[in-house]
Image 1 (cartoon, rainbow, N blue to C red):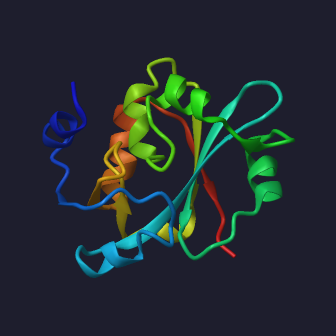
Image 2: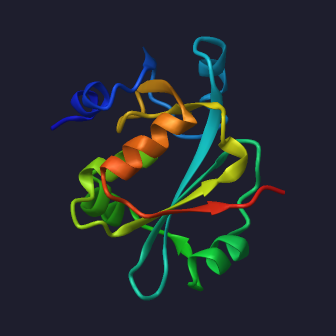
Length: 157
């Protein structure tokens, strides 16, 4: 089942636009003028034990890796490499998104979600960096739960 079929099955309302490929938060700034929502920063991390964490933050926040390590009960987090990203989430660099858990059939990824995103419309890549979808935070949580993935909240600062 593809992403859009799941959205339909779960009655997830979303808007979508196509655009040139974007690889960074800075490159995505122009998109915000074309679709409703706040930009999100997505970090695909790994620890020395081979655990994977996808952190979802407001794009304006600086990632506090120590805080993520603390709430995820791990240490020595670093960015996962492109082959891990491809193998686990079937995504390319620049396309990291929590929607990628649709491809993580072994539930290897723990999601760490910025609690400050609650009640907002989020701008996310639908598993490609040439499109952006706008969806409600609650719909993202519904999607993650449907995919049977574990998530924890990162408290705002």
